[in-house]
Length: 405
Image (tube, rainbow, N blue to C red; front, side, top):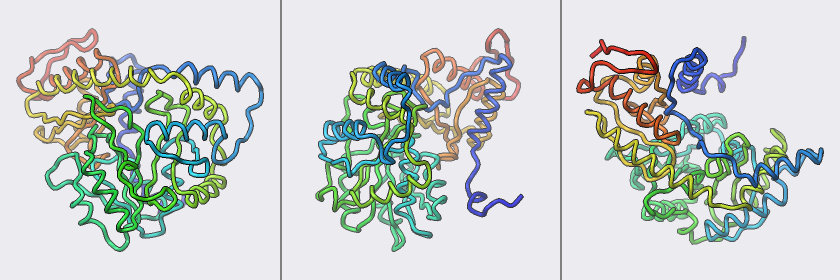
């Protein structure tokens, strides 16, 4: 079989392998706890369900315009005005099959072979591979002080004549870090001065805790949208628990959107009609579910941080948003993949290796599940790796004796 060099260059995912192992174990009746989930457990808004059902019952589920139905673009325009204080027109918006496709189409339109895209670590696992898929070069920037908050001076040091774009994600997956106003303001000014595209992945922008504000890059731009290099990606997956609907969008200058429409038309045509209609219902409907989700996640975060701090050798920075934390497990002498496999095999807890996000030695843990899963999952992790924990534990109806410490 002859496989392209490009396809061979894309990294495989230990996460998918671990998830498959966990699925098989769960089907066998094993008491698996999943702390790796990247989607909220809350229900899809009823307005979205009713809108989707009404569309289906008409029997008219057809192609739509490549860039999205007018009703959804109107809802996104209002959403952008209300949440970003930014006036945009329908010509500045393209709807795609999820925020991931939105970013993929955007990169296809912007990146030439060997163009560099700066990505700050920790980063969402797909960013580097998506850049590679358009023959670009991902340039990973890590803060010299080891913190999750990137530093503009580190980004500036990585910029070269090949730098085409910078991707930021705040609140951040996987760390939960919320970037400061000072950082965003300085980065926007730098990108505008240098003529570098700044791509802001805002998919978690309302899931910020402790009363802290969302520091949108739009706050700090001095340019009109049509003259700006600032591009925003967003979608309904996280805030509205609509991960399976696969609707995201891009807000960008008109000329970029026009090219994105051409690219998307030649690949996937239009997003799902039913999903678009459902998204209109979510965006136009009652928004209180987002605040309920945020409150639940903040409470779960506090519990997870408290539980993790009880494990000797684990270091954790309290996340400011999202569903995730990224504690440091380097004291236990295993790679992140080895530790994830160990925890799944020994105590049936699913975690995600930090290597996937550019942070070897860390694990990404999700707190979007139940409080019971959080407390029991962390208790199992502690029993597996902390010598001060009791030597026996019950997992399900089985008593296990630790014989590896």
